[in-house]
Image (cartoon, rainbow, N blue to C red; front, side, top):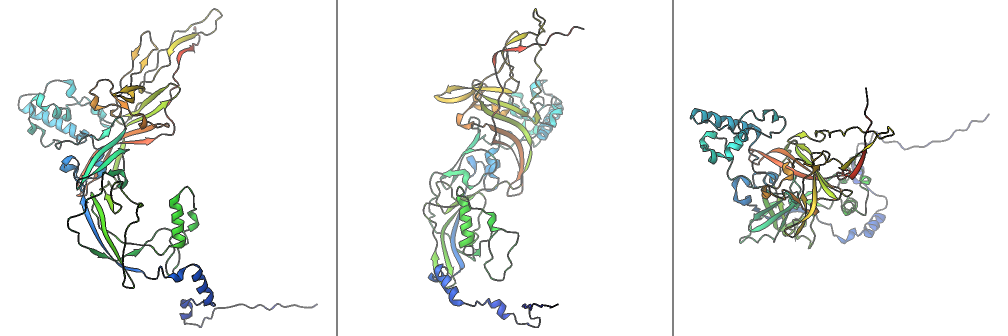
Length: 508
């Protein structure tokens, strides 16, 4: 029996070696091949031979003026969302309404002139969970509104007086959106069709660029730093990459240009991007008038933005200008007070506005059940049918029909009718403030909608309280109205001239 042995050779690390110079040198066996590859990739052109070491820039800050000239609506201190979304009467929280009512009632009793026994002065329509106090006392907000009529001195309110003047309601009930006009150095910053929520640089449009300053601002100097982002390769050798980052996790998509640009940045110019910070203030328009880069070779490179393109730009302003708003950081958002869904019912040829929540309470399904028709049997003993002119419309469903208002095509709110009884009965009017136009004054049309404001899939409009802090630390409370898209519009299945089966009467 013959034995065969294979000779195995392997490389082993020299444990006795202590010189790491050769390893850190990263030597290559064929430098000519490396030079050839650099020539093929265009690295011998010297386009990125230097690195920026210092940046000099001139930046000016243009403050945004208080809205309407009211100091408490200053974008430099108050979150922009609170300025745009505030309603008249937001100051009157349930606690203030109750406290002011008790204070005035006590002062009137002490003066020997008690308040009149008027039920319209009592607390009413308080949101959940304060609704249990409805009718338990006088309403301080109603007393303040009618103080001249009732002859109430302002001193009786004991400091519970709202700021004057009250904020103007910027909500457009026909568009279901906010409109406002801010100004900065004579330039108008128009906010149009804002759905509510976060307000940023892209929300406004300017009518023209900011004028140049009469005297250039002083130049500032800073040190640029490399742009870092998740997935960026490290620029130096012998730096350990993050194994949790996968560049392949950003698949290129032809429909997403930004994704394609990101892939190109990672692959080709990953370590050639630098950034520097520009000090800014909330409620200002930041404008970079001049940027000069000083490189490692001692040369100066003036930097100008590309013509006709900018990643962050406000329409109408110069591409060097950017609007910086004071936004509400991590605000406290309350539960939904009012919720309304609006959509087109193609089968009924109507637009329905359905109230789902009122003052924090769900209202769907709380309508009274229709009266059952009397039982009827025909001669054969089979169950009969009853005639209904129209299927019943639920209480909180409000129809809108197409009408011409002031030469414009609008959806105009109507009144539902109950035809289940011997006489027609009008259904209650809309209760939510989202379906009422204060400018109508209670006359027809009480509310109208712009057709473009109601998309094909419908829209949801919510109203809730929001609490945040201003830049000076004081609390800011306002009521936010916000519209959001629906997946499908509300549909009632409305039918006319319907015959409904009636079960036979059960005889005991």
